[in-house]
Image (cartoon, rainbow, N blue to C red; front, top):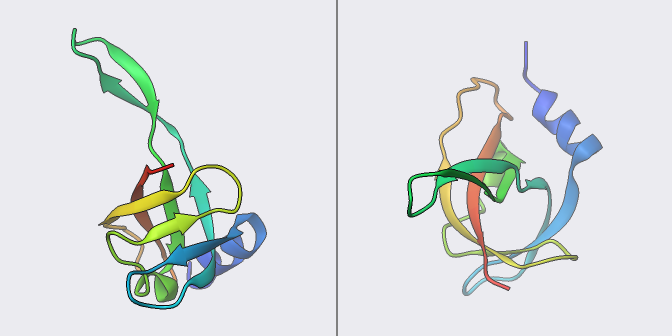
Length: 104
């Protein structure tokens, strides 16, 4: 039922980003780059809001992304891929999320 939905959402809401991979040519791909607010605890145990940058791409594209790769959105900071996050959708093109950190 959901097969193809991630590709449609990516085409509508996604934007091109450049993936700089170690030892390989740069790759331009379409993805959803967001930095939603997340609650984290400060040193006194109080909840504060921080941003957690995430890149979401359809499953077939995700195989080309590895931890340590750089994501250049064109505007704003450059990000480093930290990890691939497990998804729950059984769709063939389900979004795969990658946790990022800003490096510049």
